[in-house]
Length: 178
Image (tube, rainbow, N blue to C red; front, top):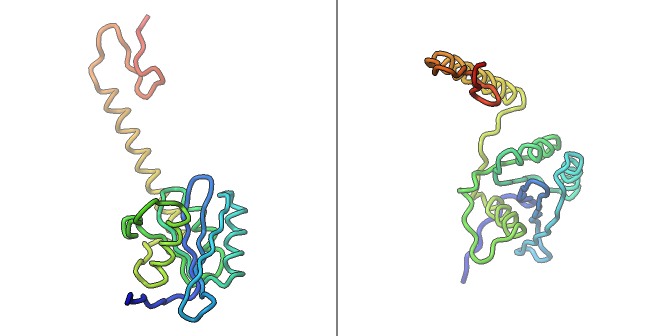
């Protein structure tokens, strides 16, 4: 007889994020006390639609939301969800979710993430508050600017080749002198 995992969170949503659309799997109690049902929804990734999706999840009684990190596409989804009053919005490392057997689809992927999270088998990564994220972004930008300046000065120190004039960071790179 197969053992069932204990469900820690009654209503969970798992989200599979892509560039132009997201799939949402809502896991909730089934008709019988020991069963669970999964409902799959699809939304476009415009921020207004993401806010509508977050409101819809709250209306359906979802308390916990989980999604796999997928680069920059995850951020707008996370911030739309953070505007609502969920108990937890978790972004997980995709390597922590077990691989699905058989043909992988977006619907299976988001349902599997929700199923693992509702049993406590996944935990979210650290997401800094918006203020701290802004400071981190500014620091990264400043570091990038410093790196660009170092490259310019290094190229300017290179001994010029007779007949050529080096223009660091120019579109053509090097142009001939007249």
